[in-house]
Length: 219
Image (tube, rainbow, N blue to C red; front, side, top):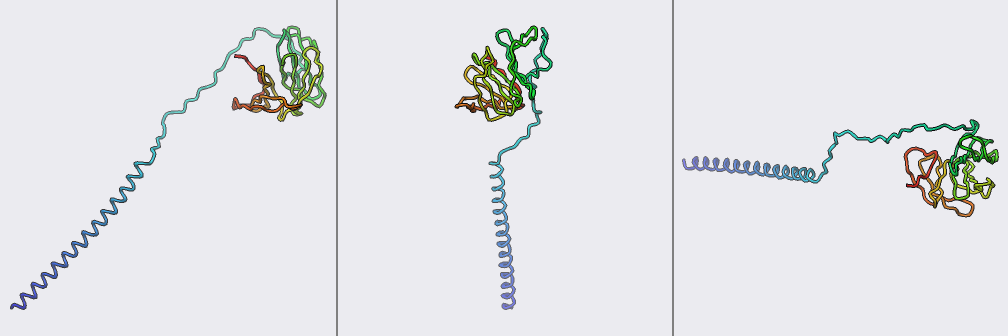
C-alpha cells in the first residue's frame, strides 16, 4: 500500500516538474519574441523619427510672362532696299550703318530724312559685315565668321586698324570703358585689347535666348 502510494506521489511530482518546465520554456520563448519585436520596433521608430519628410506641393507652378511693350510709329524714312542692315548707330543727326551681304558689305553714313548716302566704304568681298559702334572718333565694325574687325576714322572712314577676336562677330556696343560684343549666343563679351587681338576680359550670360544685336543704354 505504501509502495503504491509512493509511486503515485512520484508520478504526480514528475508531471508537476514537467509542467513547470514547459511553462518556463514557453515563458522564455515569449520573452525572446517580445525582446526581438521591441528591438525591431525601436529600429523602425528611430529611422522614422530621423528620416526627412518629403511633401509634394499641390500648388501649381506660377510663371510670370515677360512684359510686352507697345510701340507707335511716329515717322517713316526712305532706305536703300539693297542695304542689308547689320549695325546701326544714330549720331550727330545722321545714321551710321554697317551692311552685310557677301561681296557687297559696307560702312555707310546716311542722311536719315532723305536716305541719301553721304559716305560709303566697301569692305573686301570675302568679308561679311556685321555690327558697328562709335567709340570716340572711331567707328568699329565686326565681320561675321572671319574673326576680323575694322577700326575707321569717324569722319573720313579711313581704315586705321584691324583686330582679331576668337568667336563669330554679331553685335557690338560699349559702356564707355569696354567694348561689348555678342557672338549669336546668349553670352556677352567685354573685350580687352592685347596687341592686335581683342581678348575676352569677362563673359556674361544675360539671357537664355541668342542675342543678335546689342545696344548699351546708360541708366
